[in-house]
Image (cartoon, rainbow, N blue to C red; front, side, top):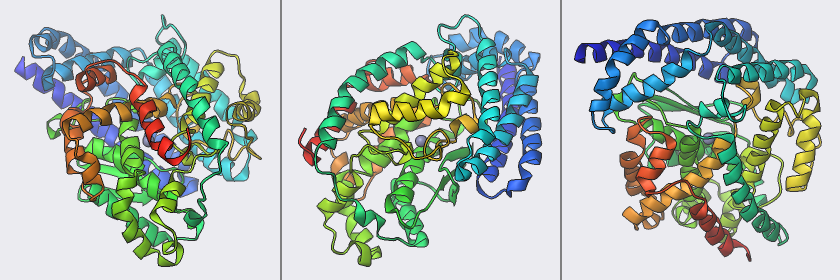
Length: 501
Ligand code: ZN
């Protein structure tokens, strides 16, 4: 059995290396690649995707997994090898259902589509990407149909980013959340808005980047195993446990954009950097789901990075770095400014209270497209109508409408957005558990120290990589299933101090 396990690991390492090389090409595409190189990059990525798929779905891998199954089940459930065999068997069963020709077609298409979006968005030209998006929807439906027997056509698409979650479950949880959130948003937005003009006082790019890097270091981001670059849409990507990249974008007229997107992506990176090195080169060497991943970005961006205690420590040094802009702004006014609640158009800029309304409407639009109830040509207007209904505002163009997010132009339609709101819910769930173990976490935060929280997250979450499913992790960490109460409690406590609720 040891020989078979070693052979399996050797084969998985090759797949992992191919995927890492593809991720590096993808990172380059989103950061430094010249725009005219999209077609050749698409061919390169398609070749790597095909090779990776061929190597992973090799019948020899299936045979090894079948032979190793009884051995895996004889081991303790949480042992590395048991988890490796269990997870790889599930991934393999899914992968052999997707034909290599589809994988190559999808990979080439998404590269062209991403590049078209990068040009269409500044030009407010939805028409130039509409046909590509229609192909994306067709490819998404084709993918779902490789898994017949689903309850909802979105389920196979959701199972990739959030294994074990179903459209019906998510609709129920989102329904509960919406019921709680809508009255809170209404009560807050009827009150005088916070003044966030100090955040737009003009902040030189280099100094913004330097300040963000300082906090990234304090959080525990290891610049010896990672780096930060710029891209139009911030993201985190990992090529190995010791090579994790984040990107940000900087606007001189908006201090919060680069700062909080950096803290967000650092949260994703801490998760990847914290994975047990013993899992390197296997399917376990990555975060387990988009919802769990997002719980970490939102923890470090919001629960920590937008807390009052955090700014008690950092605000004096921020004022020192930008005296002309902030010397006359009190800590209380700054704290209110970075937690301003308003009905706004851009998801990534949205405050914690309204953010989930942005996510839930995208999730519903995805379901409607997949159900065949919404055609691509009607999508721009459906987007505007939903914003008017849910947030009471309408974007003046498609730039901040249907062209706003990269997801549908660089991936499939279905499963792209629910992870953000699941992440918010889970961030509060896990933070509550961390506080039980270390009640002094808020006190440490107000001293610019994050060792207790980071250490607890590494021990209970990060080191496990993908050994456990999201629901298993939630059960292990909190002793129960997913629930929204800690998140609602967190919002009500924090915003109850800032506004009359
Ligand atoms: Zn994120």
